[in-house]
Length: 107
Image (cartoon, rainbow, N blue to C red):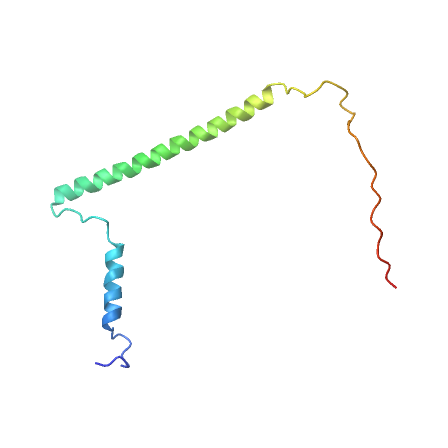
């Protein structure tokens, strides 16, 4: 069969090899055992590890949220220390008036 066939379902050797490569890449990193009991134990252990990681992540997230709420609460309850006691309406500083640059005249 030549490469210029009209059959859209005919696959060349290169496309068959590419399809097989894609299928092997999508498989698990290790094969499951053939024994059904060992397979069930391995899948149960993987499920327990997944549930454990999910639980640990949930607890860690809740701890971060609780710590943030505690920090906000402490910052609101404690009085703030001002840098220098004085009148709150006075802004102290040195200023210099700068003239704007001249505009170009058009026309």
